[in-house]
Image 1 (cartoon, rainbow, N blue to C red):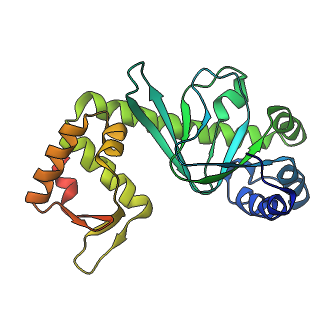
Image 2: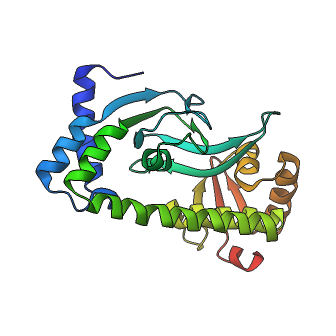
Length: 235
């Protein structure tokens, strides 16, 4: 759902501030950056709502202004494998933006979110004005391909215990806070969410969590997991 004009105006300022922090747009002048920000359409999506489906023909670029979304693959049975998570300030949709081909994954709002959407033709117009945008975007794409390779390696060579610990440590590296005992505090995910992000079953995740708690590698504290500083030795 597109926001009304008054709310949208406030979000335009947020878009401009976020664009300044994105490597893709780092080479733009302030005036050019402002024009790009004005080209974004501000959308509001509810938790669980699909932004676009795998194989959709849309080619727009998105930025997360508020909330979070996840990129997933879904099979015919409704099982989900989460490929990546995107929080405030992250962008997604760049592959179809560049090649004009159908979407490679389904994007789902992980919580109530506000997104900025830029049409492909407006992005290509910006690239013609400043080709460095394309080079910076390619650099970001390479980084994401490396992350995809890392995920494939985990699925191929690591057991569920190791995959889960690797996921915890990855989340902790990005958003964790260390407590007085050296444990890293991260927001708790449900067993279903953990299963989707590790390519495992919920039953397997439940067993591994119990084992990790028993070994004091993971602690549960209300809405948080506490990850031991010794967790990396289990990978």
